[in-house]
Image (cartoon, rainbow, N blue to C red):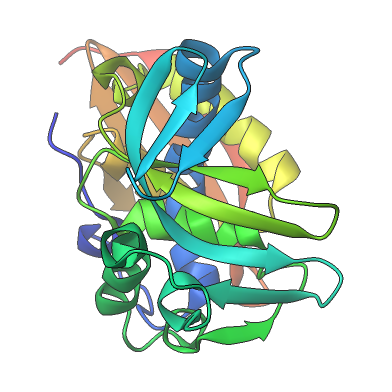
Length: 239
């Protein structure tokens, strides 16, 4: 399946709002990260070769490039393209530049360095970077020392990492995500379905998708401008 960018999701949202972008991205990004951990990383350590632009897990090597760095002692994020003192190779910086070009009107992607908070974390920034890409990519957090970590984008991972989820598995992961991440539950459902290749429809407060004689339904309520899920159900239906 060709990767879909969340920017093309058939739902109205503010493309300049980081929270909305995160809500759309977090479902698929979470699933892909877990799949990469299970299928590729396992118990292996990591090693990044900046000059070769690769990351190695055990005896497996993949192309990578830097997104940015998180400094917990300063509480800041610094994009790779803004790190002018690093002398990193230009090709190694390319993922950070692509992210900036994809979201030129999002402050978190156009400002070279900014303060982090509970919403704007290194992991969340990386998940949005993955979500807006139209390529099969994941990210990895590489701790440098007690305070500094770099986030790299990884390419050419096995196709199995990005295999579309059946509806029942998608529903299970959706419930895990809403218990772990602050997000708009309607945008989460839309982005997760869209990036797994499903067409979905909305009827009032209900979003649904069908596949293989099964239907997944989400029922939402709006509270304080955000949508919260009231019910998630999956049933057999006639096509």
